[in-house]
Figure 1: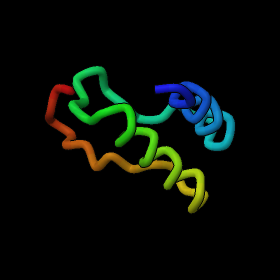
Figure 2 (figure 1 turned 180 degrees about the vertical axis):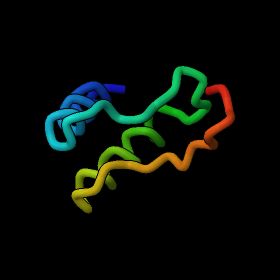
Figure 3 (figure 1 turned 90 degrees about the vertical axis):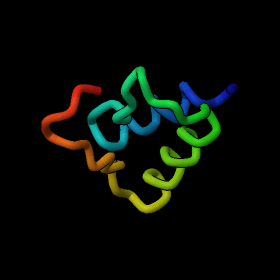
Figure 4 (figure 1 turned 30 degrees about the horizontal axis):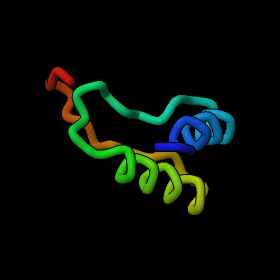
Length: 56
């Protein structure tokens, strides 16, 4: 998807960290882009609510 990497760069610039996206994430590029856009729009980093004892 064109633009996904640009959105990831924008997210990293705005929040000082990479978008939390494990390599095993089954979501499509479009779904990830939507989450990044939502975070950028509301001005809050994405909270993936990861389980503390789970291997991702």
